[in-house]
Every structure is written in structure tokens, then in C-alpha cells.
Image (cartoon, rainbow, N blue to C red; front, top):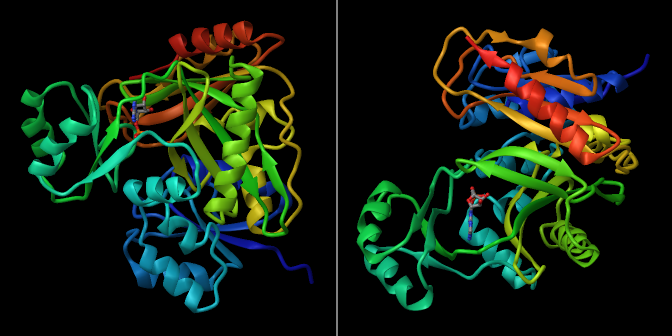
Length: 380
Ligand code: AMP
């Protein structure tokens, strides 16, 4: 009898859903763990453990049902992953990789330790520390929470001494660890998705160019319009990160391009990433498929870009429930677009509800179609 591989995913959001969609071609089975019953991956998972991300017993139950455990976001219990590994379960990316990434300050220390270029930063343990940062950094600079932040949440731009106290209060007044980081006057933000299989294969996707709106990713275009030298630097930095963090599976490396054309690492995510959605339609192998191949020890697929691509997120503009999407008919008047709707039951302002990708002969045409389709889509 053939034994189907079983994969456990902590998290049942859109990233988990897209992993399942791609890996179902191999007939793999998926068990997800997510506290929300109607989470995006629920409708296509083979089984769903409805439990909190800090429920260690439930995470152990998930592991006992599958061959390998992975996760689709990094704010999960490190202790749970460590316990799974001690019990002999396979977990990728490993708890060791996550331990160097979960806390932004430690992540930057680890990068610096490996001579990977990052913006200057210092830890902040008190308001006095923050005031002291003034001597090291010119205004503006950033105050960041070291844990739990996403989509710019947990960041504050400090433009003058007057703003210091308020920003400090806004970010918890020391209740969570904080750091100050030099403001980088970047010319572009780019990201590189890199992948390593447990069989040793390494694959690096083309450099993607990202534009954020209100600190949330708005558009990604590929190939990034950067010099050949910057492109090589970005790909090389991504490879170095795989090594430095001993990472298996997908690793997203978000980068700033400096006015001099050099690369600084902004942050890492040990998983498939929003800026890699384009790989589904535009690359020979998607980031989701390569992630699953990587954690199951299979050879990785080609990351070659088939056609220029543009991706635009569909972000909630106001709260609504139920979430009813409209405008698909009009959006599909653009023949090269693919529309992804995640199936979240509720819209919230700033919430990622779906995305649109177009591939075309030129980047301009892909972007034109993606924007036209995006204008047509809205939620009731
Ligand atoms: P983060 O959540 O830390 O990735 O930050 C969200 C966004 O804030 C980034 O995509 C950048 O646009 C901006 N940002 C973060 N750190 C810096 C920095 N050191 N200098 C300039 N902009 C930054």
C-alpha cells in the first residue's frame, strides 16, 4: 500500500493554504493547527486542529499525526518546537533557525556576527536608552519592537526629541523589548526568496521589487529594476543568510537598496512570503512547492522566471462581515491576471484579503493589468 506523506502546518492562513494548493499535486495530506475554524486553509486541509498557537499539547498532537511539521508565521512558541524536536519529530525550519529570527534584535546581531550588512542598531531598555540613541543616530530614526511586529506594526519613526516619549509609550514603554535602528534612505525595497532542501539543494528566486503602502506590501514586480551588481549582491546575501541561519525550507530576505546601490538586510522570514506570491504563476516552481519539496527532502525545482510579473495585494479598506468579494467579472477582462481570494470571513481595514498576479510580455503590461483588475475588485 502506498503511504502518503503527511504534513502538519502551524497556522492556517493564506500562506498555509497556498502550500496545500501546490502540494496536493503530489497527493500529500495536510493537518493544520489554527484557532480560527474558518481560517483560509480550513476548506482544503485534510484535518484541522482548532487550538491556539501557544497550546503546546495541541502542537504535539499535530506532530503525532504527520511526518513533518512546518509553520507559516514566525510568532509561535519556540519552546513547543524545541519539545517536538526533543521528542524526535521533524520540524522545518528548525527551532534553532527560528531562535535567531524571532527577536529582531537577536536577528540583527546574528546577521552582524556573520558579516551580513544591516542598518546600525542598538537595544533600548529604558526611555533613558532611547534618549541616548540621539547621540548615535541623526533624526529621523526608528524605534522597533523586537518581537511580535508585522506589516510595520511595532515600528515608530522618531523625527525629533519631542516625539520620543510618545513613541516609547505607543510601543509599550518597555513592556516588550525594543531597539533603535538607523533610518535607511533606501532607493528601493527588494526581497529574495531562498530555499534549501534537507537533501542539500539550494535554490534562489529572482530578486523582487516591493512597494509598501502604510507599511503593508502593496505591489511586487519582477524582475527588480536594479543594476546587475546590486542583483548579484542581493542573491549572494540571501545565500549567506541560508547558511548563517542554518535554514531549511523557504527563507525570505527583505532588503534595502542604498543610494550607493548596496544591500542592507531589513528582516528575515523563515517561510514563504507575500513578496513571493508571484512565483505561483511566474516561475517554473513556486515558493510554496519548493518549501514543501525542501522539508520533505526532495530535489528543488527551477526558480527561473518565465515572464515578467506584477503582484498587487487586495487589502481590506473597512470592516465588513461577511466578506463578499465583488467585481470578478470586470477584473477578468484583463486576460493575464490570476485572482487569489483567501476566504477570510471578515474584512478589516489593512487586512490581506487576497492578491492578483499578472504575467505578461513586459513588466509595464503586467502592472497595467494587475492595477486595472485591482480597481475592479472590492468588498461589500
Ligand atoms: P518592518 O516591519 O520592520 O519590515 O518595516 C516595515 C517597513 O518600514 C519597511 O518595509 C520599510 O519600508 C520601513 N522601514 C523599516 N526599517 C527601516 C529603516 N531602518 N529605514 C527606513 N525604513 C525602514
